[in-house]
Length: 360
Image 1 (cartoon, rainbow, N blue to C red):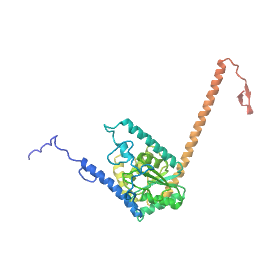
Image 2 (spheres, rainbow, N blue to C red; image 1 turned 180 degrees about the vertical axis):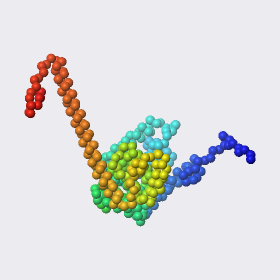
Image 3 (cartoon, rainbow, N blue to C red; image 1 turned 30 degrees about the vertical axis):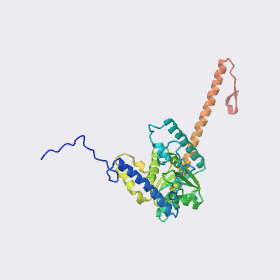
Image 4 (cartoon, rainbow, N blue to C red; image 1 turned 45 degrees about the horizontal axis):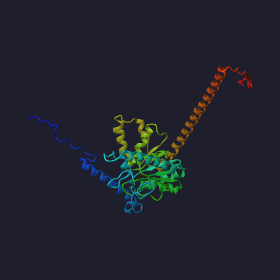
């Protein structure tokens, strides 16, 4: 049997395959990115059409940036219109003046955070609801999202979504039915996404990181309906913040046992089995098919969260009071020491009530 030939070190390496099984190279990667963006646009438009509306991206209007329908090119010029997030994430090019682009963009990000805080300051007991923009009114999940949000709205909670169609629309619609505050946090995309008609307070963001901060800051719970990468992003970010102690008593609820079963099996059979997470980490995620159950979990967690916040506030107040008392005591001792150094006679002790000694 002839010996096997050794592979030359200069031979062409095999191309890596994608999760979809395709051999990838830079050209195919670019093609895949384009296909992904187009499919995002298509399913967003599909969500609007299923609700009986013409998609904003089909009306010929320009993308929304902040409060104006213009493509912002004052910080960096590109051959084709891109989102502000894409501009931010581009590495500095040799022919660009760094000092006239990114530092100013930081100021813009700061102003967007301030605007978000200002507009959403009145949101109390917010619950963020996530899910696919492609879900139509005839889908059972649309009805479940609407009913869950209605129940929470009747319990005094505000409903926060990404302002788009599908599950987001269903949640905002449920809030409106309950007479609750309905909030939408829209994001600039390569096409005009538009907001659903059930939003009371609409905030338009350029930067994903600012929008994600608002979802977390003004929410006491996340409810995750079936969705894609964006939905998964919000799911795992919330769980990570809980795991790292940034959030507490913050329920993350997966709605739709059948849809999420595969992901949960993988987390148990692979991620947990390999020791990448602990058994307790899986308990950070709740699972249900019942709107009443989901609403009850949020209401119960909010009660526990409020009690914990009250306890923390009392501990902090006691610590501050103790610090003030220590400061006064130290100041008194210092005054006494200064008087002794100056040769001032010490004041005689006086008897107070119940024989207590006090200094005159």
